[in-house]
Image (tube, rainbow, N blue to C red; front, side, top):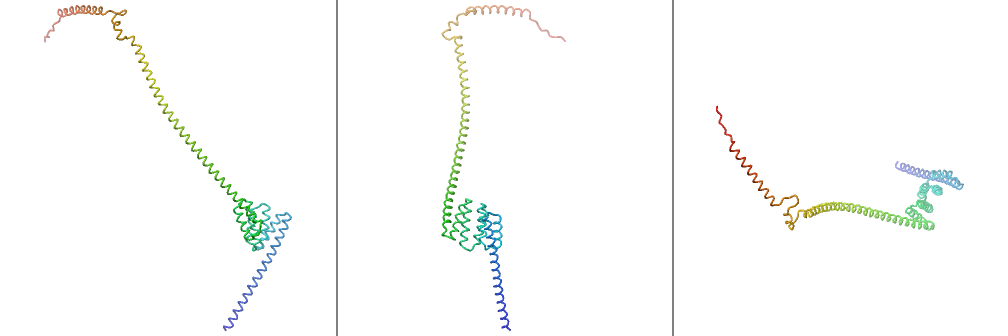
Length: 288
């Protein structure tokens, strides 16, 4: 019984192996068929492109890519068509696809070389250098790729130097603007300070002017006093002052006049006193 079961298991394993081999063989045949069809479509695309029929070539290449992912020639040729038509973004996508799907180093080399060319058109020299390096890894003998790599490095260095110079110029310009602004601010502050000082000096000048005016007025008064003093006389003219002036009495005449007035006033007073004595009234007590 066990022997029969072992024989059955062996037969099943053999059947599975045969089926797997058959399926794999069928799959390989299908892939080969798809690849042949894709290759034929690629040739059709090449023919249309040689006849300058870009639209027909694009259609054939796209069909070829969809039929077999193993056909790296279809995306590569389509990438070249886009590149020549200056559609660089589409070209890069197809070159990248070709580089990833290709199995031979020669095909990879061509794909990365053309990717480097797209980067050069974009002036992205850093990525161009990396793409050319990858191409040389797959084919170190290609002198054209080596030349393009050297050119990309030189342009990259020049671009970096220009960027650095532009940045330095910008920094210098910013510094100059800051210096000019500082000078401007400093000048405005000095102007404000000078205006303040002029105002203070103006106030002081006004005060000095007022003092000068006061002194001038004082000098005028003094001069007026000095001009009046000669009219009032001084010590040397005392004798002249004692002498009678026009329409004035002498000292002796004044004394005589005063004496006469006193005598006349005394006589009048005596008469008044006499009348008071004779005519004085007596106050009576009132009877009730």
